[in-house]
Amino acid sequence: MPARNHTQWSANPPLETGEWVDSRIYSEQEIFEEENEKIFKHVWVPVCHESELPKPYDFRTTTIAREPIVICRGPDNEVRAFLNVCPHRGMLIERRPSGSFLEGQPSGNPKRITCMFHAWQFDMKGNCVYVAREKEGYQDRLCKENVGLRRLRCEVKFGGFVWVNLDDNPAQTVEEWCGEPFECLRESLNAEPLEVFHYHKAIVDTNYKLWHDTNSEFYHDFMHYHNRITGFNDAYFARKNFAYDNGHVVVGTFEVNYENYEGFESRAELSFPHLPPNQWYMVDLFPGFNFNLRGSALRCDIVTPLGPNKVMIEFRGLGLKRDTPEERMTRINHHNSIWGPFGRNLHEDLIGVAGQGATMGPGTEPRHILHGRHENETIHDEIGMRHYYGTWGQWMNRLPSEPDKPYTATAVAAE
Ligand code: FES
Ligand SMILES: [Fe+2]
Image (tube, rainbow, N blue to C red; front, top):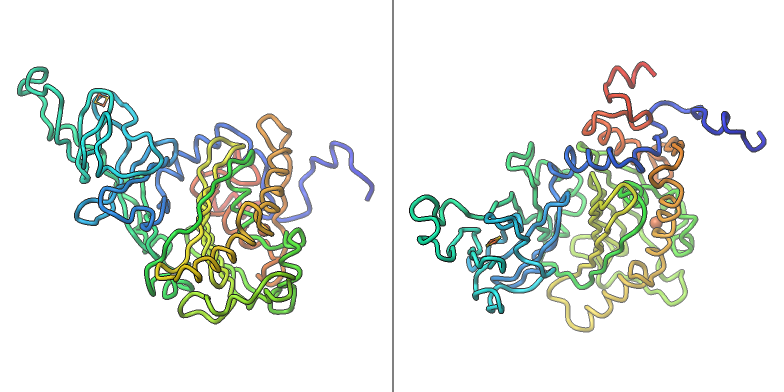
């Protein structure tokens, strides 16, 4: 068929419902706002790793669905999460990305979370411990007990990741939410303490779901020269995609032939515990969190959607805490040579999704994005994305292929 006119270009593809999505799910402000309300305010988000808060009073700040969060380690060694919002007049309390409350600040006391605006202070459990001129202004009408921080559900799980949920009554625990997809890595991640050795972030003009797609489909591996050289063999293409409840997907493993790429070396010696050498596992959690283990290095991507066509992706690299300096350097090299900002793969994926973002920004004409490959559920089968968007449709009550229609089993069956 020759190139198509507008009518032909806009017609539905000869595929089943569920085998394509409408690009408005990536471009519409209303859908983005709804995703924050219906999805991100109710799912477990792996906000950081406990090794980033190694000592009591260490903290990090972040946001989930625009809500500022502070995560801190108490003197009892517990990691807790709170809204980073002052109960007095709504000031953002802690403005640094990370640090320690142990030392006093010009506008804060040691061992306290201090709001610089009117000097209210909180302890590491979120209790308010000081209200400036409390009696003079509030007499007996309001006291410290009335104005604690808003605490958030927080669990440390799966190799020390810190999981936070904005919902006080989440439908599931972290274990129930994603325990099954983590089964392939559980023993390996829990064998001994892990440590973050790499952090960088990218802010990309694209939709967060498109980034998640690059992590769950391998059809784009033609773009990755490194994968073609170290991977493309029967075992590579035989890997399966496994779909789990809640929209999660796991991509099966195989042995990567790193030595086939000039300048690269086998990762066998530093492979994570309980795994055969040079394996490559991928756990993709709905709605946008990825755990990617390549033999000796674990990568974790966390998305924070900033708009329909803007996403912040935080990349962390992790190894074993007990690494010797030499082992750590080797592990960092293994990680960065593929996944660092100048590595072999990561920038190629970023170019891919930035290119999609360039065609699917707000105001662009809706178009079809195809997810219709069937290949026995192996890595070039787009089952992972179909599974993900099915879950997205249920949470949003929208049909991904016609987002103005509600998602119902009958609507899908009727098509
Ligand atoms: S806004 Fe925080 S003390 Fe007033
Ligand atoms: Fe990729």
